[in-house]
Length: 371
Figure 1 (cartoon, helix red, strand yellow):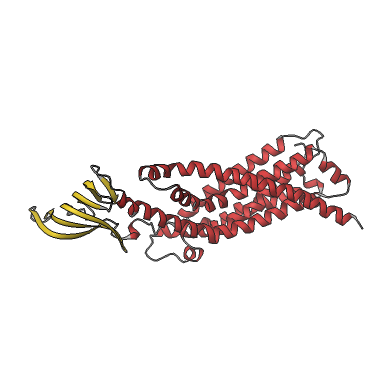
Figure 2 (cartoon, rainbow, N blue to C red; figure 1 turned 90 degrees about the vertical axis):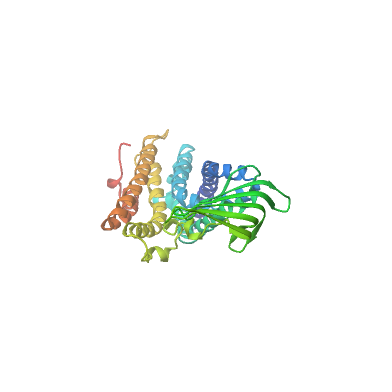
């Protein structure tokens, strides 16, 4: 009557080790990826004098996508490491001697894999697209709005695409003197604007400068004549002419799952294909957690037992998972070019786990021998 209680305690013991290792390994890999990816934002932050809070918020919005990508892999790493440690400490030998089957030994790892799979589904379907949308919006604000308030006297400063501003001096109240603006947002008729004084302000539509006592010089595209227009006051927007010109609406990574299955008619056929492939990827990718976990279990529980352990099966499992990750990337790329290959995405995700489960949990004649 005490045996089920003993098994439950063993389950909790193994599950606790797996969970702690998963948190530590995932946190370490996320920190490493975050550090490497954040290097490309340091120049923007340092050059424009932004606060560390802006840097942290900008890079933190990328963390959900990192977590969703590495969780299946870290789950595999943790399973191999923890069960190999249990085997090396002879704990698996004792558990088997107590009558526990491979399925009973694998139960904690499978439970963790199911939990991680559900977390990945939440990340892929809800959190990652929302975070990427916020990231793009926040990045837009930094590059096109905050930049305008960091004009340095005596420096030609590109404040948005096609707009470069030079000021001779700047006051503490954002008053400007000796202003030159090169506006090439309309490439067919670029304009040069000069003004004695001005005031930098933030309007609802973005940053703008109120120019006083100046002139606008523009070459007529038809006649080739230089037109000069003097003004007492002129308001010039320094923001992008349209926010959509900066935020790429064709980016499938930030689209919702519903939008991915119903692409906009304005998208080109190749773009629509990428959106459909992205939808299948979001739904299938979390299932790799189960497949990778079972492959890891096969490496440490399957095959003949060796007193001093071995590295052949774990190394073979690592090679198999690496190959599956590369295969998944390749199939996604080919499916984006030919939608008839979409079913292969699911085959590549489900087949390895099914094969590994058969080798691990079916009778001994199906198990790998000699490894």
